[in-house]
Image 1 (cartoon, rainbow, N blue to C red):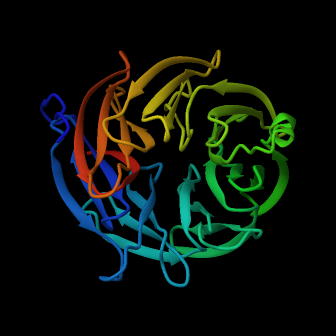
Image 2: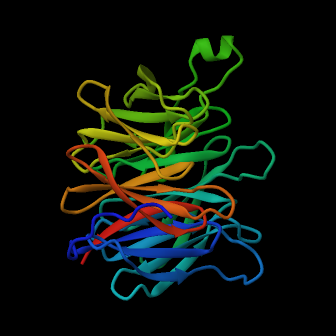
Length: 335
């Protein structure tokens, strides 16, 4: 068992953590760090359907998850944060992963990673959330995994793992407007790839950060040209990176390195490294009071996944909570 976080009275928020191999979402009380409940999800009682992505709506009234292993396709589920009641679900594509939601909450975009499919032009699902209707599957690239919506809601960026393409989609007409590549000439010359697993757009929409899981680094992309302008080395298996709410620091789980790095976005310097309790750190969310970063870790086999609690001021881990098998997506909602 990992050490429990320092306990304090309720901080006024809850943390939702998907557990992919348990078909459940754990709900953790901020501050006291107790598991309030575990919510079973999925349809089949015989097959693991796999909670992968988890995202809160901008107004905090709903939370969404992707279930990756549906038949024949995966699904996007919508729940209320008041009572955790299921509102609806939409069938999307093969192995849906990361979720992005527009600032008005009206649209959810889901990358269809198509994990077990043959190389193809895979898609991004655009779902109208009031009715949970998949309106369009937008052709993108091969095995998209990273996705983020700009803070003004005008465009979506998605990155693909097999061809290292970065695609810009106009959120108004649901069409691709531009594409580029995060694979560099030196990668090609060496027979290597980036394996672009995650992307985050800075608040002013001018830059994006892309995690390169095989190159063990983060690449900075100019949004206007979709060209790489800078590189941040030293993150083995860089994965589902997340900007803090102000966009001042970037938190990057190093999936192969059992740590999270913290990057100052004004300089692109690494300003902290935090060792995680378990293997395979997955993603990061932030407490509404600004005090903590919450880091999920998948772990391995029958060893439970964990949620680490990190002091955002000191960048020190202050504790950890076991949450269930293969902890994945994380979201936080104020009470």
